[in-house]
Length: 230
Image 1 (cartoon, rainbow, N blue to C red):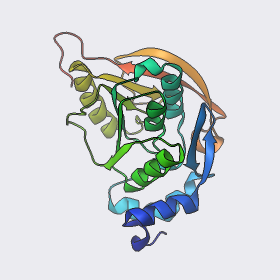
Image 2: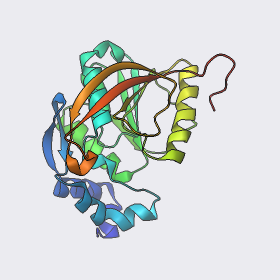
Image 3: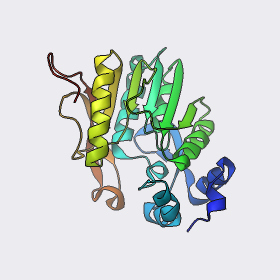
Image 4: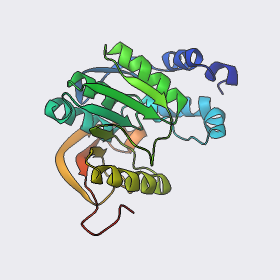
C-alpha cells in the first residue's frame, strides 16, 4: 500500500505516477504519449486504502481507456470541433482529451477530476506533450462548465454517477455548450445522443476482456422540447 505521506502532496503524487508507469504512445492517437501502467491491478492495490478514504475507486488515470481514445482521435481528426474555443475535459483521468484539444488548437483548455492522482498524472502528461492545461481537483457537476465544448471521455461506468453526469451534461447542452463523449459499449451511456463516428480501439484482455472495443463518439443532445434535463 502507498503510505499517506507519499500521496498527500502534489510532488509525492507525481513521483508515484512516475514510479508506477512509463511514458508510452497512445495506440489510437498519433503524437501523444501518456504515463501508462502495464497493469492496472498493482496500482489499484498500492492505492486502495488511500482511494477508499476519499470515496474513490478505480485509478482511471493510469491507462488510456477505449472511449477516451476514440474521442481524442475524433478531436484530432476534426480540429474544427475545438479550434479557438474554450474546452473542458470532464473526468480527465490521464488528461488525454485535454492534450488532444490543446494540440487541435483550442484557445483555452481546462481539465477536472475528483482524484488527486489523476490531477498529478494529467499535469505530468500535459508537460510531456508540451501543451498547456489548467488542471484542478474538483467536482463541478451541477456547476457552470464555463466552456464552449465539454469533452467527457469514458465516464459511463457506474449507475448512480452516470445518472448524475447525464442529467448535468444534458442541461449543459441545453444551455448551448457542445458536449461530446466516447463510449465503447458501457451500460449507462445516455440514450439521447447523436453518433458522430465509430472506431475500433485496441485494448487488452485485462482491461476490457477483449483485444479491441468498437467505440462510438457521441454528442449528448438537449432534452426534447417540453422535457426536463432529468
